[in-house]
Image 1: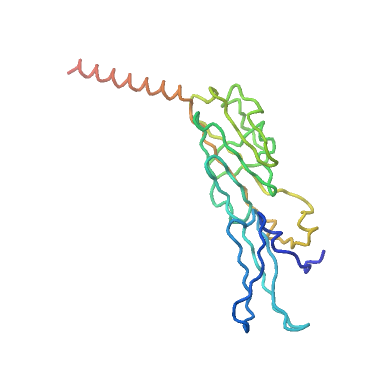
Image 2: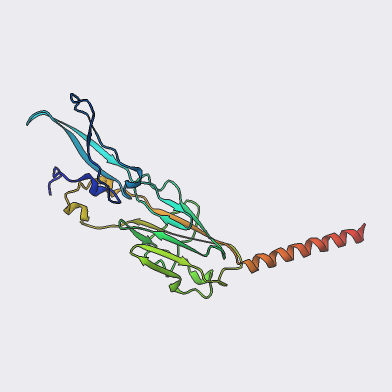
Length: 240
């Protein structure tokens, strides 16, 4: 469709919003205001054009950029967004025997990273983003690892759960994430939405996961440390 095809701005938003242009209270006023609730901001950037028409030949146009929300972490769930300003920092999750799972929500706009997420993870490096192809082997961290530790209750929503007794003896780190879907003809185009170069620029939602050591390993280390301190104290007393 033509780039000038009108469309309902609500189709750019998430949830079920019914926003519309509001007039000012003064009957002589020609000002219009569009207010978008924070919870309805999209997961990807959009851009559209509005304006004013004086007559058939005189118009004024305004380009409006609708910025995507930021990626966020709530408890053990990461919700990814893909705007140019959505991922200023990595999201972080910690897994422990007491909190042994987390959920990665790529959403309808995203796809998981790495592509074979249940076969390999991305090696955590400072500032490095998650990627489609990574080589980290889960069995290097979890000798008894099975792909079933990853599950998908909903489309593009991925949960990783470490079974009881399978935590490593030392702290480990893995990196996963989501990126905006790559598609030749976005559905938005067929709905009359403006597809612009700005929308093609997206950022990667990267999640750095810290895997805490098992409780037994921590307790054993603490016991050894206490024993060594006691032994040092005894030796010191004998010397004195």
